[in-house]
Length: 106
Image (cartoon, rainbow, N blue to C red; front, side, top):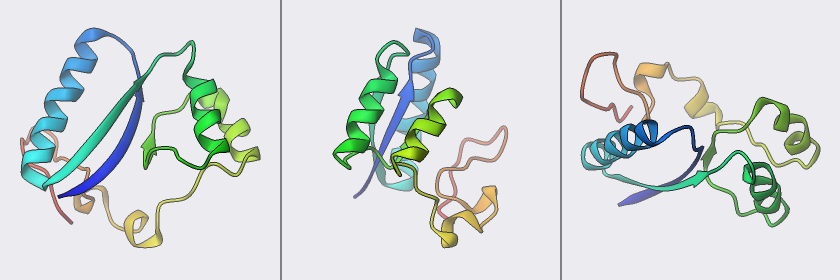
């Protein structure tokens, strides 16, 4: 099974429960295991900077908008591969059609 690293900021317990439920559904349908790391806003920036320094961050991260310039200066952000970013949202592995309970494998 393929694996994907994902880090998200903690917003509230209900949001986290929803994300975990959606990830379970995604994993079972897409057959991609998601290693979820939940960051809090107080330490999230320093954790992402530390991961950037050692080049070991997750595949996808939610970042605070004010953190972008720090991460760009460290050359810590990378674009999605052209093959991925050129496809429409409905064709990407992580997309879901609104109101549908199925994931596409693009």
